[in-house]
Length: 185
Image (cartoon, rainbow, N blue to C red; front, side, top):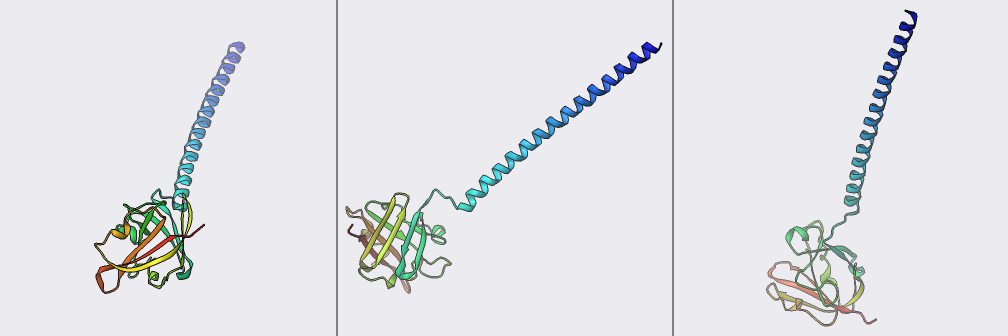
């Protein structure tokens, strides 16, 4: 009878041990799964945060720098009111780098009125245009008031040119157009 009790005791201990090990392994596997899921979520959050923090936007073309008037603005594709609230807008029908690059921005009544002082530009003033394609320096060679319907200043050109356009205060149908040509290299 003692042998039977001893064997029964051993079987019981083994059964409890196997159950404990099985339970332990299951908890370890569950914890590993949970850790993997949490790490994946953290990675996704980090990647999302990096994207937002860097301000990555595929429609960002570059920047415009005019030291004379303390302008350093980001250029974004498009010239809608929504874009012009926060950026200098690239006029879609114009070149982005080679040729006549058309840019528009507000000059008043907006938090980012990038072209508020372009009326102060004079012939020979320098403008720097930076993009993923490269950087170019331009010099102002004309400044005119044009009708809002006059698109001739935005036509394609063989030479590299910047055309900056903004509204004129109290002249609803007119625009200020500052043009600059690439500086001789």
